[in-house]
Image 1: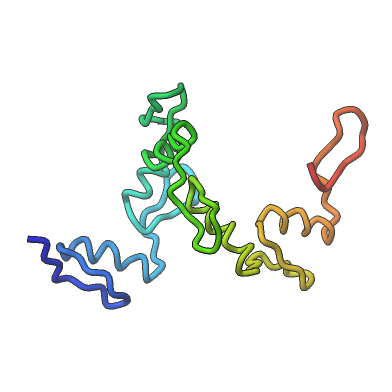
Image 2 (image 1 turned 30 degrees about the vertical axis):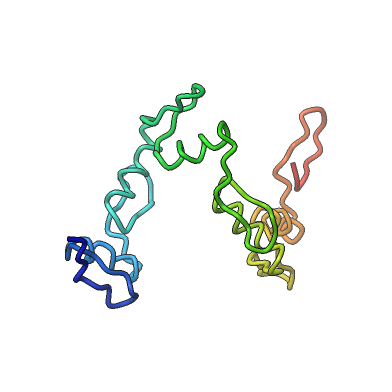
Length: 158
């Protein structure tokens, strides 16, 4: 009948089954009772743990019909298939750019808002991308993780 009598007490989301509501509410508590036996990661839902465990087993049951690539998650296959179709379902509301992945749209939207969410804890600089912050932090630490294969020189950036 489509009836959803179970409402989350923390937000407006509604569910048709009480069990689904209970599983959902764990997200609000931050509780992560499902522990991976292979590493230290923990998850709020068992289904997320099962998907994660495929990264350890190497299991990739989702095969692309256009090429030889395979994926551990169906959602990753769907995203990959857009490289073949050219589909870009995520449209920027500020300009005419469109993206195949939602995460790329979110990053792009920061060019319009000026948001720089990655803040250096050592100085007042902030960055649009996490990898730029990581590189910047090396100016404070002096870390040079990249070694030249031709000489002994080390560098902070690749």
